[in-house]
Picture 1 (cartoon, rainbow, N blue to C red):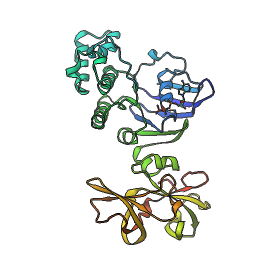
Picture 2: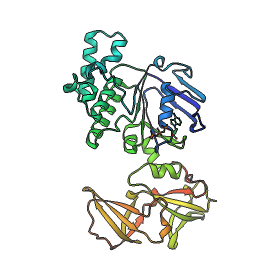
Picture 3: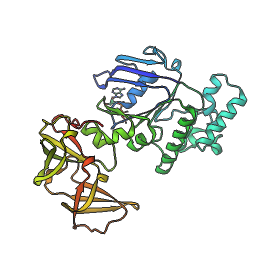
Picture 4: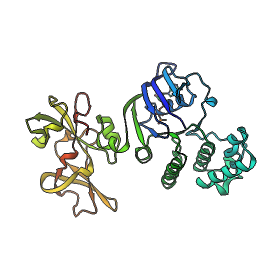
Length: 367
Ligand code: ATP
C-alpha cells in the first residue's frame, strides 16, 4: 500500500525533448489512477519515472513520505506491467509468473497456490507449460499481468497492458483488472490512450497533453465538467460537438449566437466569465433531442447501433464545427429518418459547455 506524491516533476530527454512538465499530484493509498492522453503526451514517461526506470530532470517523487528520486527501481517495491510484456524467454508460463515470488523466497506451496490463482484469473491454466514464444501476443500480455499481480507490492504500475488484446478479451481483462483492484485495494497507476478504459477503471483520471496535466478528476466529473476544450473533446464518444459562437450576457439570460444567427439561451448565473465574447459552445450528442419547435438540420448519415442511433447532421454554415464537419446526435432506439431529411433539434441547455475561444478554457462555474 502506498501514497505516491509527485511535485513539479519534469523530464527533458537528451536533445531537449520536454516530455513532462511540472507534473504535480498526490495519489492516495488505494486509488486507481489512470493517465490518459494522445500518443506522445508523456504518460509512459511519467509512469517510468515513478517506477525509477527513467531519471527525473527536476522535481521530487515520494512514496509513503520518502523521497525516491535516487532509489533503484528494485528498492521501490512497485510491480510493473509493460506494453511489451518483457517475459523471460527461457522460462515457461508457470515459472515466469513464479519468478518474483522465488526471488523473495516464498515457500513452494505458497508459490503454487498464488500462481494458480493468478493463472485462473487471467485464463492461463492450460498454458502453464508453454514458453513465451509459443504464445500469442494477447496470451503473453496476460502472463505479464499475472506475473505483476501475483506478489504483493506497494503499488501496481500498468503501461497499456491491454493494447495487444482483441476487443472482446480487452473488455474481459478490463473487468478482471477492476476486480483484482477491488480485491487487493492497493494503489494502481494505469496508462492508456483509450478513454473508455480510463472512464470505466479509474477512481481518478489524469488527462495529459504535450507533457502537461490538463485536468485531474473523477471520471464522471471529468465528463460533466471538462475544464478546457481539449478535455471536452478527448473524453466521450462520439466526440463532443463544438460550435463557434458569440456570447452576450444580459441580467438573467446569456445568449450564445451561432452561425446563421441561431440563438441559444442559458442562465447568466452559470457563466464565470461574462465578459468573454468569442466562445465555443459544446454539447454532447446525447444532450440534443428531436423537437418539432427546434432548429432545422439535414440528415447526412445514420448509424443504427442497435439500442441507439447516431444521426450525423448538416447544421449549415460550413465553419460550424471545429474538429470535424459532423454534428452528431445520439437518440435512444431507432429513428424513422433517411439521408436528406430535415429534422428539428434542440439542445438540453442545462448540459451546454462554454469555452472562451482565445484560451479554450471553460467559462462556466463548476458545480
Ligand atoms: P504513447 O501512447 O505513444 O506510448 P506516451 O504518452 O506514453 O505515448 P511518452 O512515451 O511518455 O508518451 O513520450 C513523451 C515524449 O517524449 C514523446 O515526444 C516521445 O517522443 C519523447 N520520448 C520518449 N522517450 C524518449 C527518449 N528515450 N528519448 C527522447 N525522447 C523520448
